[in-house]
Each structure stands twice: as C-alpha cells, then as structure tokens.
Image (cartoon, rainbow, N blue to C red; front, top):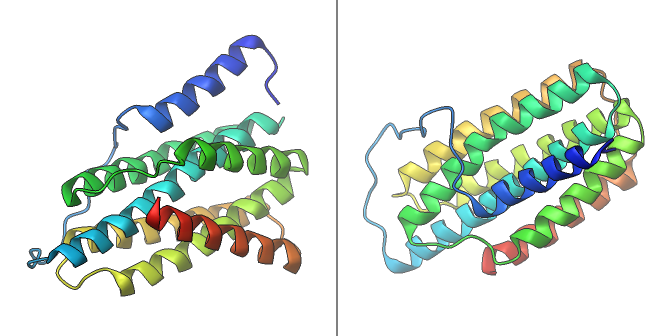
Length: 209
C-alpha cells in the first residue's frame, strides 16, 4: 500500500495521466502487411467500437498494474509490475490513435473502469504475491482470448486495426508467461468465472458507451 503522501500523489498522477493525457508509446504503431480496404459507415463504427473496448482494457491494465505495484512489499516484483505497466502504455497509445483515425471516442466511463480495476488490483496484491501474479496471468489469458475474438470481428478491410490487435495479443501472451514464471499460482475456478463475467460486462458496456 502507499507508504507516504508522496506515494498517494504519484498514484493520483498515474490515474490522471492514464485517463486524460495523450499516452506516448515507446514502440512504433504496428503496421499492416496489406493496405486498408474501403470501410462503409457501419464497418467504421463497428471497428471504432471494438477499438474503444480495447482501449478500455488498456486503461484497466494501467490501473491493475499500478495498484499491484503499490500493494506488494517485494521490490523486485514492484519493478516487474511497473515495467509491465510501461509496456501496456504502448497499447494504450496505439488503441487511442486508432480510435481517433476511425472517428471514435474513448469510453465515457473510463474513470469508473479505472477505479474498479485499481480496487481489484489492490485486493489481488493484498492477497499475496503468488496470487497477485496468478491474477495477472489469468487476466492476460482472458484478454488474449478476447483479442483473438476481435480479430474475427473486425471488418476485413481494417488491416490497421488488425495489426494493432495482433501485436497486443502477442504481448499479452508474453505478460501471462512472465507472470507464471515469476511464481503465479492458478486461481480457483469460481474466481476465474467471476473475472470472465466482469470482463463480459465491461466489454458489452464499453462497446456502446
């Protein structure tokens, strides 16, 4: 947990930067192997909505990793969480850029999504490092499956969004593998089920709002 007023200010700064500033990626935006095809208005709206959902997922990832870093007393694990958050900033920047290119807006509920994910991250962190890492691994596993579904739903002509989502999927699989190798433990079935349900609610709502 935060150990000083300065720590609290740093957490607040992280939240404000995630929610209201333009994120800066450390890697170039993934480029498609083939040029984009024409998109009609319906396809453009659907692609924009899917990228909004993915952007919400990255807002939540920032909150989760920041909270888990704050909760652990293991300095090496804290550094691991903060490094993962920095890598997820690339995804935050890519999805925001692609939303803008498609004429879509971020979710109006992003502050709520961030607060909820931050609370879950604190709970996972307080449960112990092995559970916290298991929570990361399970989250990334579910996100990877979700991104795979989006590759099937994106319009065929939207190669730019596909390139971004495909790279995100690879990165999430790597984050999950790192969490397992760092000592993550498998979460109970009911907990995994509740996580899937919460993710389904978030993606359904964010697709529209």
